[in-house]
Length: 225
Length: 225
DNA sequence: GATTTCCCTTACACCATCTGTAAGTATTTT
DNA sequence: AAAATACTTACAGATGGTGTAAGGGAAATC
Image 1 (cartoon, helix red, strand yellow):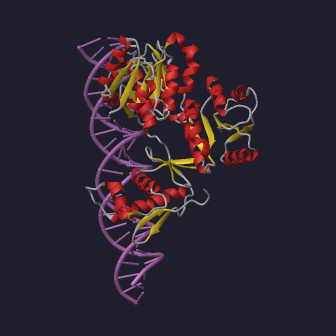
Image 2 (cartoon, chains in turn cyan, purple, green, orange; image 1 turned 30 degrees about the vertical axis):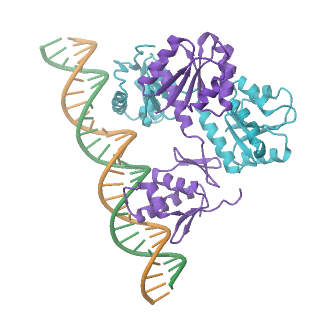
Image 3 (tube, rainbow over the protein chains, first blue to last red; image 1 turned 60 degrees about the vertical axis):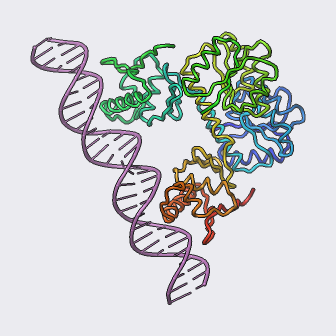
C-alpha cells in the first residue's frame, strides 16, 4: 500500500484529501507546516508527497527543495488556480507534477497513480552492458533503438542482467518464469531462450547470452565499457 | 527528428557528443557557455537539453534553473563521477535525469530516448470529466483504478474527450479510426463504440457516452466537477 | 571414432486479444 | 404501424505469446 504524506494547513482541505486518499486504499498521513518538516517527512519514507505551496511558515517550494535534497520520491504540488502563473516557475524547479486547487478528485488520484507508477520503477534501467532494460515494462534499449520484450523474454533477460557476468542456472531461470510451485520443462525454457536470442538479434545483439554447459547461462561481458 | 542542445565547454567531449547523437539521427546543436544562454536555448525549442554541470561562466545548475523557469523540456545533466556526491542535491532540484562522465555511449542514448519518450506525452493526461486518459498509451484512469484500452477504443474515447460536451459526428470518429483514405463502415464504428462502452463499465463509467440521434456522440458532462 | 549427453532449432497446436462483417434486436421518430 | 436509426451479439480471420514434441547439432566421454 502506498504511503502518501499530505502537507496542508487548511484543515478543511486536509480532511478532504485524507478522505479521498483513504477511500482509495492509500495510506494517508497529514502534517501541518512546521520547522524541519522535511526531515520528519523523509523519516517516514513516503511513496509520494502531496505538498501545498501556500503555507504560513515557509513556502512549499522550500520544503520541496529540502525534500529533493534528501532524495525523497515524487512530489505533487498543489496550488490555487489564481496564483498559478506566479508560482509555476517555482514548481518546475522541484516538483514532479503540480495541480491547481480546487481539483477534481479523480484527476488528483490519476496524477497520484501516475506518479507512483512512474517512480515505482526506480532506480530505473538495468544496465546490461551493451544494452539497457526497463525491468517494469521489459523495454529493451540499445542506442536509439528500443523494443518491448514479451513477458517470458523479459523475465529471462532481467534475471541474466541482474547477475551480469555470473552464471544463472536453468533451475533459477525456470523459477523466474514460472515460480517455485510450478515446474514446466527445461525444454520450454530452452525454447524461450532461443526466442529471446532471436529477438536480441533484431537489435544486433548477437552472441550476448553465453551457454555454460551443464551449469546454465550468463550474459557475455560487453565489448566496450 | 528530435532536437537536442548540448551545453559543454570541453571541445573534445563536445565533438564526441555531437558525433554520438548525429549518428543516431538526432539533431544535435552544441553551445558553449555564455551569458543569457538559457534564453537562447529556449528560443531553439529543443526536445532535450544535455547540460554539463562544470562550466566556467556559471554553474550548470543555474542554467538548469533558468531553463526550467522558461518551461523548457527535459534536461539531462552530465557530471564527473568524482564530483557526483557534491552536486547530486543540485541535480535533483532541476534536472530530469543525470549521468556521470565518462559515460557509456549506449547508456547515454538510452537515457536520452527515455527522456524523450517520457516528455513526448506532455502536456499529459486528457481530462474526461470523471476520468482521465493518457493519449499516448490509451491508459484510462479513474480513481486509483486504471486499464489500457485497445487502439480503437482509445481513439474513439480520445476524440470524444478532446471535444468534451461537444457532439462528435460519426464521420469524424470514423476518420479517427481509419483515416480519410479508407472508409470502412459506420456499423464497424458502432461495434467499436459498444465495445468501448462495455470496457468503460469495468471502471463503473456507465452512460458516459451519449447518443445524439442523427448527429453523433458526445461525452456526458461529469456529475461533480 | 562411436556413443552418450546436453543443447539448439523448428514446426505445431492452443489460447487470448483485437478486429471487421453480418445478421438480428431494440429504440426512437414519423 | 412503419420506417429510420441505434444497438447487441455471434462469427471468423489475424496476430502474438506460449508449451509441447520431435529431430538436428555440438560437445564431452568412453
